[in-house]
Length: 246
Length: 104
Image (tube, rainbow over all chains, first blue to last red; front, side):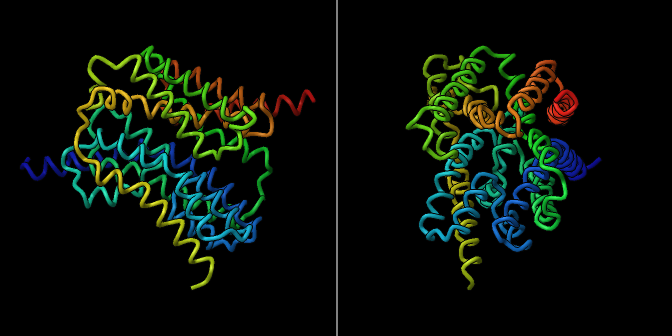
């Protein structure tokens, strides 16, 4: 095989691996965005409007807050601010993911791939043991994007043909995925376990405490994650400084 | 342009820029030890904060959600992959829902 052929084969392998890792995300997204489509329809959005929002935003919490703000006649400023705060966690994820990217991923490629940073895609890519290449990341975002868009379309058109109990049970798929990423890492490292317990504690505190529970969901996630990761880094900087992901 | 399209454009732009700017601009490997460890812990902290306690309220019943999440955790602990763990969460929660309907 020539060098070009070898490179081509490895690119294909990377893309296919991305597709494979993206499949469970796509399934979870289909169900979650199906419920988003139902929500949009119930708020008076046309099927193409909800689908357009999903195809251009690719995020759950932000979109839900967005359609609620639009339906309530909120201002453009309120809309922009809510999107900014709820999605601010993606900035943090972008910086974190940046550390795990292969050297070949230049600025313009990043500008394209950046669109695909979601909680789940980030979670899978950032915890990958090997550096993340452009084709792997493209493969990883392909099926979730299709699942997210199609799910919204189906949900918006079919409305609530499925009983609520069925869609609710399906919505656990996404959390199952998070668990599949976190639990093995916490089992392997006590430091990760400590950070995970701390993050859960702060998150619950912000959910149940009288004043704190007024904070928006997106902001609560940022606060919990930053606090837990910072305490973890302060108490237990790994000897290799987290280099195991390089 | 209609109000809807304006709103959709604002949502798209804000969401995209918040994602892409730090990812595109921040390219150097971080050398600072604290910040490196911090970034190492972030994905696990983010995923946990999104799961708890929100996932407990994802279904109509907290017990059903807890059954699904525990099943997922047990399989993840035994090293099962993403698809298996996600499907197990749904299947266990589905079974729990059926049980509740049968018993109730």
